[in-house]
Image (cartoon, rainbow, N blue to C red):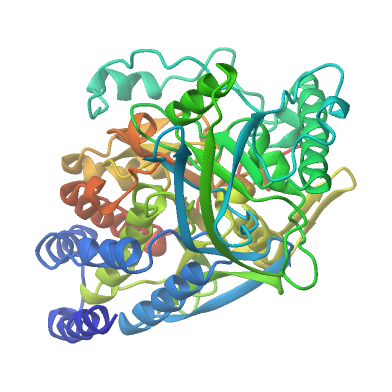
Length: 535
């Protein structure tokens, strides 16, 4: 970490050398040119991305790794000339969890290391534990009574991995001109403004909710069975392909450890240890077991679980506006800093957190004027359901429910929010999120960025990330369109989400794009219109 601190001391010194005095008048084109020069010739984005991913690693919300990354982000933003701090939010029931040691192998009929990792929020094993593998059919219509008295000291597999089909050839994808034009066309039928945005629970089909409730009940029953019977733990096949592993299994591992929230007061988990394995490894264990072969697995897992202190934190940094008449209006831009615990959270979403910090640096170092206040947010709790951004919106802007909208004075002062969380490909445009009235201004701001490939103003909406709670309240909030590259095919929530997957040209270009959009929003004559919502 001393190397990391030294690098940013040098970065801070370079900042003071790059910032230049402003001429009496600075046109928009001159300011954008300054931003491009600063971002392209003096970029620190990869340096910051490496710090986030290599030094802090995976950043599960409320983990020590996340808290260290958040502290570093605050200090870095301050070195860039911003006021910055962590802003607590709550209530937060998820406990603090981190893995400190893990090993896994098959001990019989042959000695073989097994590919796997601890499930997040899993309990620890009581030292190094070796036991036979048994199968429990969680979907059996007779329930769990047939397994009573047969699980003590055993490792349990409850889900059969599905067949692994040949994977199609995967290439890093860029959006073509034709695809960008197609994105600008509204979907048919058009989305009614009263229709819930993606991510709204009301948009989930009732049969899905019914299945989820039944599934959760079965998994809770499995958890009680394993604890009551003294099983060593659950071995679950992680969703994955081509050697990629994800932090969830799609069936019971998530449900089994759901009751870890909240943990017992002494930090012990009321659920059994849960280990996620490569589906190929689980398949072999089951086939051997069903052939009558005695299969033994040895595992050791030490996880640190601390009961929730009731809050988590977002990182908030800002540059105060210079124009007294509009400085209380705020232009926001952000990305989530948290990640899952496989890989190092690079494309989801450490690279974009670095882009946002770099955009903040560019705005300060280039010396361009900012009439309105600009505010950076690095969110926590995104991976658990947009928790940090939702709490921020409730605290600062208000709520909307069946009893009506309850807005704060800050609601009218938010000029815009830009969000980045669709991988690390180049920004190509913006989703309107049902706010068609904002299209002319956004299109005008993007015109100077056409040489960066930023052209599309899409009539469509997208969900699943931190712009959703803003947009759902009617605020002008937009997720940016990005080249997909290999995000959904390879790196999203997988063990290959690492620094090596970060394309320097794309991240550098994206920081310039964000800084340019924020600059224009901060200096525009008018704020963006809001999306109309039903009363």
